Image (cartoon, rainbow, N blue to C red; front, side, top):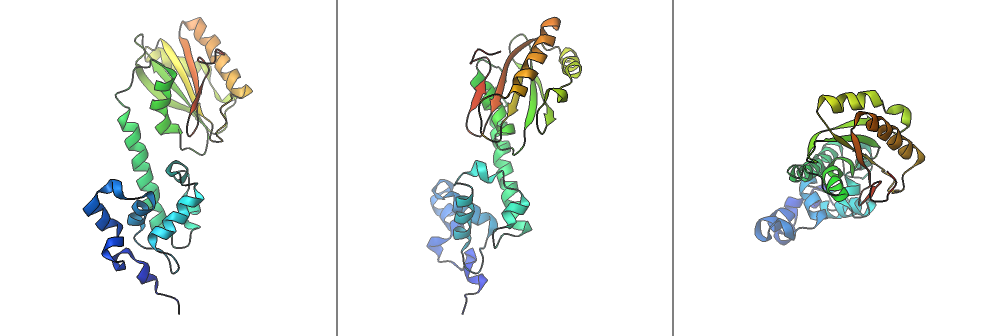
Length: 232
C-alpha cells in the first residue's frame, strides 16, 4: 500500500527534520538550498518528501540556483508534485533574490574597471535564457547617468539603430557609452555580429565626440571585455 501524500507534508515530519523549525532554532544559514526550497513548496509527492523532491529539482539544474532561475513554469511543472502554484512560488523567490542582488550594486555607479560593469549588469543579464543588448551612458566622471536595454533576442547589426542610440546619449548629456550584452550559451568569445555592432557604434561616436569605452559580454559566471582584450 502506497503511503498517503499527506505523510510527506512537512508538518508531519519529526520536529528535528522540519526545515521551518531548523530555521527557527539554528538560523537560516543552517539550511541547505533543498531545505529552503522545501519550505516554499510545503509538500512533496506520493514517493518523495518536499526536501527529496527539491534535491531532485536542484540536481536537474546542476545544483545551481542561477541555472534553476532559468527554469520556466512549464519546466518546473514537469516534476511530479510541482503544480502551477508551487512553480510560481519558486520563480518568485528566485526573482526576489535576483532583485536583491541588483539592489546591492545600485551605489556602485562609477565605472573604474570592466569588472565594475560586470558587477552592475550581471543581476540583469546573468540568468537570462535569451540575449539582451544594453547601453550604459556615462558622464565625464565615468558615472552611469542612464542605462537601458536596446534590444532583446538574437543580436545583428540591423537591430541597432545608431541614430536612436546617439539621440538618447545627447539628450542625457552623455560623454561616453559602454555596450553590454549576454551570451546565454556561456560562450565568451565575441561573434562577428558583436564586432560589427561595436565598430558601427564606435565610428558614429567618434563623429559626435562620444566615446565607446568598452563592450562587455556577460555570461552566467564571468565576462569578456573588448577594451581589456585590446580589440575596441
